[in-house]
Length: 615
Image (cartoon, rainbow, N blue to C red):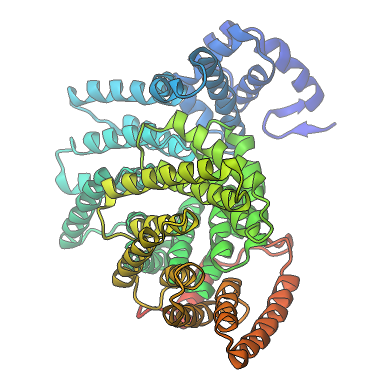
């Protein structure tokens, strides 16, 4: 007889048949929480989510909004993804109904906050806050409340409800501080501060994250002074994520190195989930410093470890795929990046649904990767559609003028500009360019409000405006934007960084094709080539535009020798590029490869020679 391990010694067919009638007795199920096992309760709720009527869905929402019910469900670790899907069904249904009552944009932008505040995640956060208010007035102990808060905060953040998770975790910090034993309070607060900081960074709560960062650093120093040992790997990784958000890439790498050094000492008492996240963040920090060999080692270990432990359909595995796609895109393996992003999107949409920040983020990344992949073909239909879907979701879930809207609007603007260029001479060209300019200007203002002027993100927005103004034939404005971008990037990243090469190449294109300043253009093209080859090798895709630019200059000037020289170089580049593309499998993730011992991976990481940094 076939058995269902989660349900106990019960025939699967009989068990499945029983779920239907039981799920239709929602009120009776509500009264039997204490005796129904959590794994069975999840299956009952899944059946209601899949087949329930309107009344049953309303009762399900009420059940999920109860802290004691959710706590019972969260104890069933093997059915975590089922729990996410139950939430997805209830939340998507609520949002769909609410939107149908609001109408189409622009009405949505002023009304969607009321939608979010009535969803299950917000209700749970409010109920936890009520318990905290009671606890503040009482003498304690508060162990059970803190346990609830940690699990609830982690679950909400895992599901992409960072604002609500941040609210829960910040209240936990207050409860911890009530402990009259100051050193014990400090020791216990580190884990809560780590989770809180990650939530704030993921939700781009920049000012709040800085307060948490300073608080955590102060507590760490006090614990060190008291010679109290705590596991700091996770909090150091969270520090790295804040530096990464701010584009302080040297600091991001330094904190990740500290996290890996700490992890090496405490690896046996660190949860796999935490290990995966530390590896992911360290890999991203290596990517932006162009330490690709180190990044590859870390991100592949994170991918295979998450898949081996949690499964190939798990949300934790999807998290690693998102960062693997980021590595591949920056490593100039764009086709593989698109494949990985698609798999990540498939998992996240299945788990979270379309009205979720986690899904919107991967849609944005996928749309950008498609934009890069199809740059030469001009086929931007899918990229444009996906970027708009991401914007629509973020408009619903995020407050007006939220920082995360800057990135996705930038992506859509880049796509619209290329569509406009391909529509040259048609009535839609001007409208598309104007829309792209509005999106770029909005993205710039959102970023300036948070980061000020001297920031890599600001430089990127200036560079994007420079390209757009070139397309709009506003050449002086374009030159001004490119020079601003180069100046900021050089000061923050150094003269040999990839980002500098991009801006240098764009300014070279402006001088070459539109302003006829050929000597300046030649110098900049050669500089861009030098940086690109230094970082990515002779087969780097970005070299095409600079080689073509130089050939354009020499052809215009009638310099036959130089034109012939770079025609040969370009032909050689194309052969190398074709070989590289042919050698890349569509599957960046091997089905056969498994994770290594993490201790060995960390040891190998520190053994690999640093190429582009002074660390």
